[in-house]
Image (cartoon, rainbow, N blue to C red):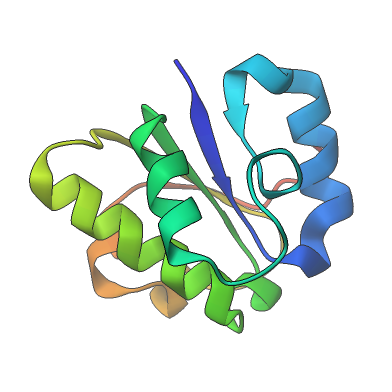
Length: 115
């Protein structure tokens, strides 16, 4: 199973540790998959190669236009039946109610203090 790691660049230290632990063959991670630009095409291609969408919920991710685009692309992939598995990990005290409505129905793993 390959996981797409959706996160804010401001949370890169935390998510980078998760990426390192999982290994490069198990993830689609922006540093390895596409340049740090809002490239919708690259996001969609990375999602197409993924079985699992992992959203890291934080104040930083809620305020990120890049993360919002990843959420939109994941919703489209889910609607087409291309994406079945979604996990959400809260990495600060941000409420799940700040997520897009379609993601609120997913169970959130409450605040992680370390990867």
